[in-house]
Length: 238
Image 1: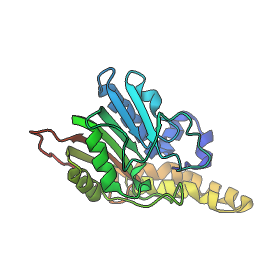
Image 2 (image 1 turned 120 degrees about the vertical axis):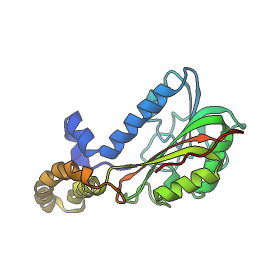
Image 3 (image 1 turned 90 degrees about the vertical axis):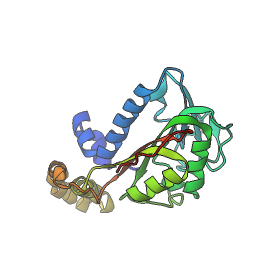
Image 4 (image 1 turned 180 degrees about the vertical axis):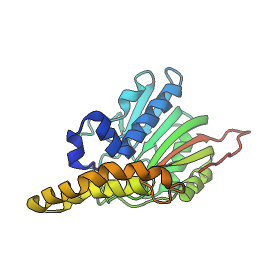
């Protein structure tokens, strides 16, 4: 994912306000890692540069990625270079798994989710994040966008239970994010004028987001699921 460049220079509280999707992911990772027991085995499937590894210093973290998503990234810190469609791990090896803004980049999402389920222990936890209304990124390896219903269906078919799918932001946050990108599409003189034009809406529109209760327009989804055990039942929610 690419962040709007002006946001990098904002103070941390304002940056969190504007980069709502990224902030929600970080907050969920803190919750997810904090709920895992010490020394739990965690697979970061689609780890990229390992930007989330610091959340799992109390655990046995393994990062795997195919290493082709972004030519500017340094994949040297990966524990394993491999294809998520055929993970090089035995069945039931991990207690938890991450798949953060990665599912849209794989060619066969159902197969990847089945593989994640295979390497998880029964009852193992999955945290999956997928963008919804987002620009093309890491091209040409950007293949899919998913609705909340599609994500739930894919997870259930892959053998996951207790599926929760939470939209991150509604129409007004989405609109603010799109406006924040507008200056980047223009040459320098026009970009400055556009920046001045959008700065107020970018900060005001998210304040209206509570009025969008359905959240059919959203930046993306945070999904929580558990590998089904012998007696697991699905309590899906969205």
